[in-house]
Length: 239
Length: 131
View 1 (cartoon, rainbow over the protein chains, first blue to last red):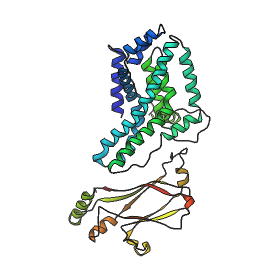
View 2 (cartoon, rainbow over the protein chains, first blue to last red; view 1 turned 135 degrees about the horizontal axis):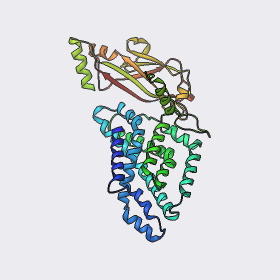
View 3 (cartoon, helix red, strand yellow; view 1 turned 120 degrees about the vertical axis):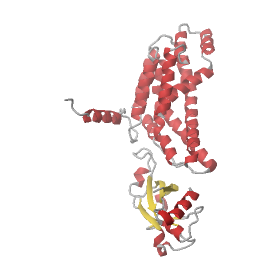
View 4 (cartoon, rainbow over the protein chains, first blue to last red; view 1 turned 180 degrees about the vertical axis):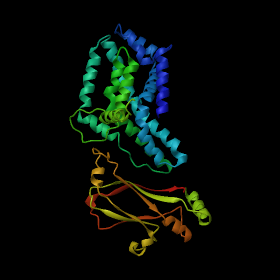
């Protein structure tokens, strides 16, 4: 999963520094004049298939590290001959959930770009929304469900269905947990990849925390910070 | 796995130790912590478990199962998982009583379990590990 993520990040970086930006990044430049004509132009230059590909690439880069634990759960409970198939079905179910969410989030980002071009207001509103969602019980409920590891059938069609269902359900709760943060990189005018990286790091770190009862409270990557502090403290003193 | 277990057990009879066989009780959930079970393997149909102590793979106590079954607690509703190492499979093979395509597992409560305890077991699996 880390290898897939690294590969996807390299492709994203190459696209950003090379000839073509990811579709939804370059679209920002077209929002200078909001009109039906500019919408047509945006869609002409960013066809849905290209947008879907860019979104899938973004997912692979940002979300693959989050799938290490659930994929391990599947691998540990499958016969060796079924492992690749079960993991593929899980990923397909997970990706399906996120692709549907991507259609909504990208539409929202394009709509915002067309109605309020070159404005910081949408990004500010999205950041406030992300902050409120971050401290809400709903976010904790979604995070808790991301830690669910269901029982999986070992044989036959039931095993395939369980893998797809696990992937789709995991994807739905992952969308619920991450959607506000995923919206932020889509709305920034500059530094899209840096925003993606920051959000990906945050999502990975907060997923390390164990489930707790949902309530209104600040939640962040507490465990990741404790691990980082412990690692720094364990370094031998310089001579 | 079935053929590999048989092959391993047959080979071990002449050359060394047989594979270890693990009996996993996964995603055990429920509302009553004060519950315990004996786990028997390959009991004859309708047999009284008490008369077959050699078929007892182990006993499990579900302490902590209530909290482990709650989605919004530390275990995220996964429940408890128990792993029992059993030599019964090897003993069955030596007795020519091993049917690897149908290994019966019976779970017998130490004391009667009320229905409101809602004890469930997500999956029972058997794994072998080569020595």
